[in-house]
Image (cartoon, rainbow, N blue to C red):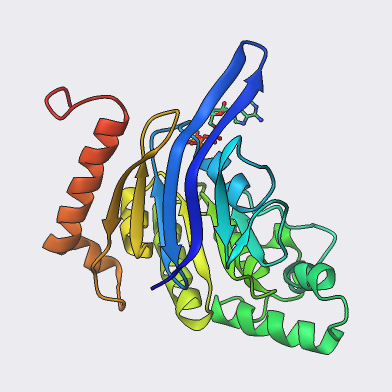
Length: 262
Ligand SMILES: Nc1ncnc2c1ncn2[C@@H]1O[C@H](COP(=O)(O)OP(=O)(O)OP(=O)(O)O)[C@@H](O)[C@H]1O
């Protein structure tokens, strides 16, 4: 499989009053087309910085980011983004919130086609019948479902998610994981998910990348060799248990604590 997203030797430091703060230090990452890459690492190691680089919102001091055969040097229309806070616009209905990226990316598309596309996605995530509601009339989980629809409505080639399920309660989060897998099965996109939740990384990922502590480099890449047809019970199989154990050990190392000290 050829790499669709490739991050090569990326180094980056932020300028702060106290001097340069090195955040990424020789980061490498490869994601084949259509694969789901989950990224985990200690708090503050540079995961969100990584998403900004992939989205073209900032450029690395050193190294390169390549997406679909082109070097990323500025924001791209073919990128979709989802964050922990769904930031839906209260003055728009749910349907019109989902449509928004199409208005920007594809202004020539007819209203009828935009509505059809948005309705199909809302139906896929179980929000049929809520098209005309305002964001404040929906629960947090429903808002995040709508936000996911909005992030893929323009058929991005890569979807970047920064802790999209982080603020949800455990049960809603697991529901959303299932929704995410259904969306991914129905829509062809390559995904990068930043998460603090190791179970989430194994449930959603085809691969899990563990970043070291700051300044981050790629510490470990785990191939998630679990059936495509996963449900929550899959996480309780010995294979998944082994993977979670490996990831926990890697995180411990990344946090600078060896196994003896844990
Ligand atoms: N614009 C900025 N200017 C200066 N420092 C920054 C800037 N953005 C982030 N940082 C610092 O860079 C480091 C990495 O930040 P980043 O948000 O990428 O980490 P993270 O792994 O996503 O964090 P968390 O796990 O807490 O979400 C942090 O110490 C943060 O304070």
